[in-house]
Image (cartoon, rainbow, N blue to C red; front, top):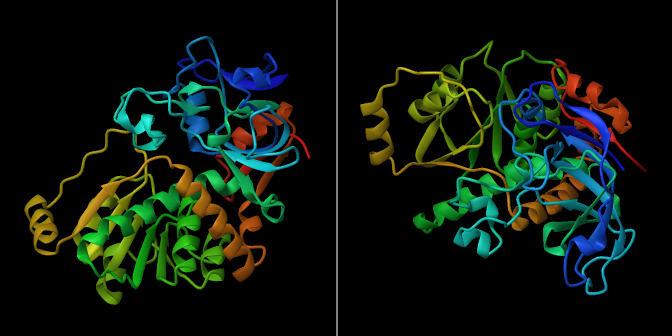
Amino acid sequence: MKAVVVVPGKPGSAHLTDIPQPKLVDVPDGRGVLVRILRVGLDGTDREINAAEYGATPEDADYLVLGHESLGVVEQVGDAVVEFAPDDYVVSRVRRAEGGSVYDAIDTPDMTTDDAYFEHGISRVHGFLTEHYVEAPRCLIKIPPALKHVAVLLEPLSIAEKGIIEAYEIQRRLKVWEPRRAAVLGAGTLGLLATMVLRNRGRQVTTYGLNPPPYPNSVLVEALGARYVSTQQTSLLDDVAARGQHDLVFEATGYSPIVFDAMCHTVAKKGVLILASVTGGMRRSDVPSDAINLDFVLGNKVMFGTVNAGRQHFEEGVRDMAIAEAQYPGWLARLLTHPVEGLEHFEQALSNLSARDVIKTFVKIAE
């Protein structure tokens, strides 16, 4: 079957090739689920892997199939599978519980303490820019047919879900925590989805992005009843000084210095700062460390990092998609800005990642 593969460590190595067809028996004990891939979303991670910034091959291969944001349909199931049936729509979790930590043992590999982790299309497990894959039922999330047209967004949505769910879990320490005001730093795909999740929960949300409005991302923010602020027009610090601090702040900019601005000025007493950006650079910042420390101690504030997602977060994402489709019909589909037809045009999808107006580019592999 056809697949888009890379050779990790070799810049610009992405190419279309033939790889072996997976079989149900690849998962033992009759527990295999054969999935035909319909759509695969791409993001900056795919671009960075193709640029040889990171990525690792499976143990038995000298290449890595790219792609970690998937939507597929079940074609066949093993004799022992009762959770799924042919024609079910599914999204696969990204991390696999193949490490040695206690968190892998309880099937929460997104919390692993191992340095080596297993992620479809990223590290040690083939991805989804191909035609079929076989997976165990525990790794698959069932998608209602009414959501199939937007379900390729579920993987990035799960990242927002995890961070926000964890914030509420952490704040159980306060016995009573009723956040009213939330800020999302960054108006890319993840920032837009985090805005949606917080609006679904009834929070007042301000989403900060670079570009002056109106532009597609700012229009999407405002369509949710949230407030959009261009930091080119009004700085984060000035806006917070005028409007007040936020009980919950979700950082999704990919620009680490803004974290310290958020720590210093944006988080209210007993507030939470969620860090979701993966930054691989070497930026340095001169920060008022004593003031930050004092403010967090006296204000009972929390900052934490979150990466990847588990089953709970994917399932919560399905629920939030359904809520959004009911409250804001058509909003999710407006994020799917740059479709590409067929695996053979994968280079166009990778190129789209640099387009100024892109929100989500994806490859349509089958119907």
